[in-house]
Length: 464
Image (cartoon, rainbow, N blue to C red; front, side, top):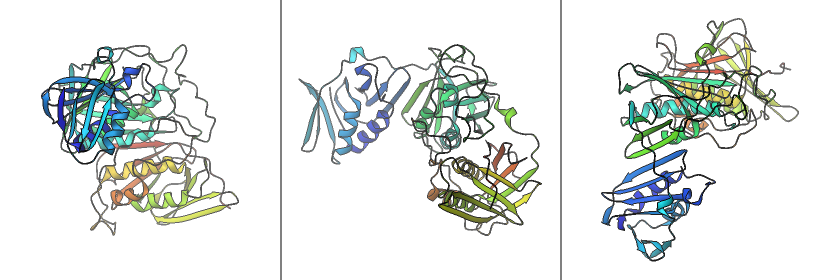
């Protein structure tokens, strides 16, 4: 084997593929990155759960296949100078040369490496930018608790030409609808995809570039888990799973179907993952039909104010929203240490003027809903000069769980949210300070919102 590839091309390909490598491989060969030199260069990895494959241009002098330590190769390629990189067979393994730098890597046994999964069924295609934005809006609501495997996934439901993504961690529920092009008319089905892998797949997607969704099993079978309940007491409540949530082990826990996989292909990259078996919650019935209180607020100023005020909120405490004539007052405090208060203009109607939320959960909903609306309100003084809202960049949920209410970045950080949300409005609707509220983007006349965010309020202390 002998080939040459540009350093930047190699570094990007290795960096992307190596993200799918297992942190703790069950067998040594699964830590390897497979390099296949033929018409071009293909890099791939597979750990029986997730696979990644990327094709790049390279000058192939002698075709061949080699399996090298993946994370080590990623570290090496990041440190190389901006010069062509040459790979060649070596008596001790494979040599890598870039300018005056040279490395020899001991290879892993290719014959012991598992075959990458084949996905024979094409489900359909969807615009990469639209799908990436939808993924970024719902994945923050997925649970990080691996003892509840159903909640760590994003449920992808297809029905005709509509795709719906939904995720929940029991304290909030994010749902986004988007158009897609099914390969077969009238296609319907549900696929529960691990949220972390779906967020990684979103990083490969670009606006205007179609994403092909492929399946190795045309549906899901296996043990059906009991429905998941939305927790009503908020993230400061007992962390034990409520009744009806399977613990992930023992009788009634969801089982895996060996053949159920989904893949996302775009721009010479393919990421596949096993589906999570089990029945997802009937989430549409969770949204209240009648909401007596309604507030419309500019998404940018509101998100900035919530972020600033929440700086003084101790872990697990709430930010309090008090609605008055033409404005909303956002308040938070750490007992005996600090207090913050800020007002933002708002239009409110309803009998209950006070409600409180986890600042992290509230910010996720504001940002996702505001970016979705993308339509400036005519009364907004910044509407004429406001930049067009852009889709938030997808971010993978962290592998380790944090205590409920802990501050984490949302789909956009506070700095980038300012530009993305400029000129847009969000709507907050609720019935009482103790019942779930709904956040959507836009105003009346803009049609049915394609993104809805259900969030459970927190109990707030009375204002002093």
